[in-house]
Length: 308
Image 1 (cartoon, rainbow, N blue to C red):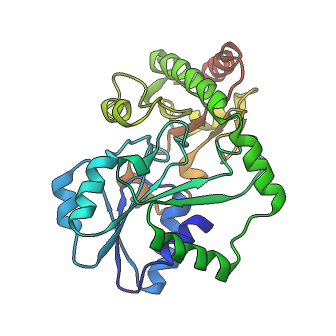
Image 2: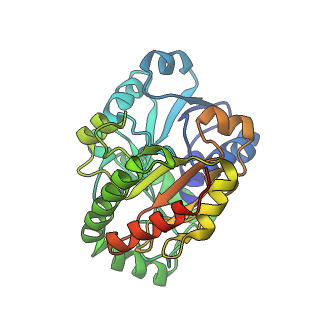
């Protein structure tokens, strides 16, 4: 969250931020409960609808904030197109690139001005760091962010920096395995009769597939799916897992699975969650690099425990 804070402190009271309609719950909470108090205003928009996007923009619009792929619905926004719209009104574009990592997507090359990473996730890759990074393409913006970092003390420890640098050495190798496992797990889930819907841009049937194919080198290790059987079915499934670990984080070598409505997005009001498309039966998976046969068998035995 420190990276988010650093970027938003470069704005002024009265400035307007256009954000994507699907966001990490902690980001939404920070926008609504913290930064609104300092005079910033926020609108949440389906960024695939350019006409709706343009209607949201006003003279005070200074920043476009998006995740791609999004957490937890795996929406993939066309960063190049959003950046074109932003430049028409002299606004900056910030992309949270945590799900893709720099190994799979480089937003600055697509026209974005700011890239945010949670280094806690794929970049460190071993679930032993808490940190964030902000990368910019503009020297003046870089100077502003460096001032904020110095003023508020958002400086990681030497050990955390070392662990992040260690993780970068294997990032490309790990991401290859994450992507392969996620694709195979997504295909398995799509064919399971107890699964209502799978959200993974690597699937040709996914509505985000074409955009992802255009701007990403692979489709990532994150997916989500809707489970049949209601909320009790979700509880039964999560309790039955033996290899996959229930937890809110992501991007580590182990498979982590969570229930957004009661975990990562619990702080988002229920009506807002519903508007986002986050149901009580949605499950998010950070697919690890375990043997895919072991992982699939774990999901299969857990799904068998769910009564329809």
